Image (tube, rainbow, N blue to C red):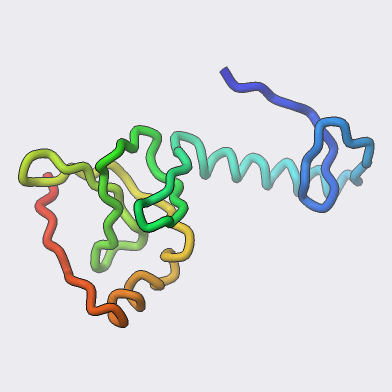
Amino acid sequence: MSRVVKCHVRCGLAHPQSKVRIGAIQQRILKKTLVAMHEATEGRRLTMTKSGYLSLSPADTRRGDTIAILFDCDAPVLLRPIGKHYEFVGTCYVHEIMQGEAMNERRSNDSQTCTFEIR
């Protein structure tokens, strides 16, 4: 069960006991921002990869799942190993690799390219 706490906001930080008042325009902006954040994170879970990357992944993410950067794919994907193939679980947001950083790192580290059989 989720709990909603009403609070006032100042400088983007929320505190339930804050007495700071914000104007109507700031309230509308805050409401739109909170709605967008809720929509973007609903059905997601915050995880950390073995390499230390922070990820917003599908809610049913499990230990042993693989986050992969697939060529021509707009976002990293979560793959679940099942026997000799993989199952597509969903897309992820992975901090610090969303703007092509992973591909740049791959070029500089001589990383290998893997082949995934996805069913």
